[in-house]
Image 1 (cartoon, rainbow, N blue to C red):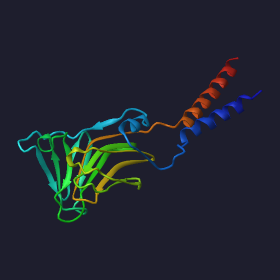
Image 2: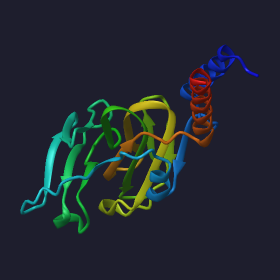
Image 3: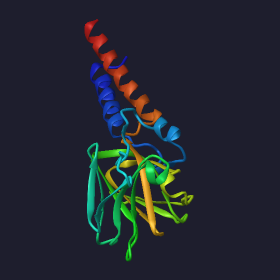
Image 4: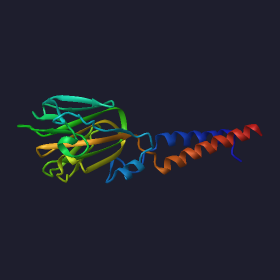
Amino acid sequence: MFSRRSVLRVGLVLAVACLSVAPSYAGAVTYASYASWSAAMSGGITKVTIPDPGLVYDYIIIGTGTASVTYSGVIFSTRASLSDGELLNVGFGVSGDPAVLSSQNQTTGVPNILTSLPGDVTGFALYYDTFDGSSVNFTLSNGQIITQGSSGNGYSALDFLGVTDTTPFNSVLVTSSGFGLNLNNVSYGQMAPEPATWLLLAGGLAAAALLRRRRVN
């Protein structure tokens, strides 16, 4: 028979382990579709869509060089250190598609959009595209860099990136090697613990329940 002290010790070890265990896939994991990415999340996903400017020309020049705009608590910005181009909100009247944020019209540098989130997350997703099918880099604030291609459909933003990372991050810098970059439909939240974490938690709870029953008896 186990003593109460040994049962308590096992329960505490399991409880600590379930809080500290990390998924076996260290680093970033990417997903090819929103459905597969959202299935890896724990729920509580926050979605941010780019609002349509609704003007006659249906676009707004937010700024040139260093510029920023905030939608639903997320800050989207460009840096003069990376480009002298414009940050625009382009709507349906121009694109024929849902509104996007666009970094373009630079004479020096590369198109860039920094997405700054309200806090640390372990999951992030967005739709993006370029005008010329150039490659796109996604630099997470934890140092992880992901490179993906683009289909070159411009404002349609048909390409998708979904990523989870065991190391939290709070911003994603998106840059392109071409002359234009567009994005919309940003989502973020926390990734779900892998099954091993739930097993450890269940073991800890079971040990605690056993100890309590022994005390009652």
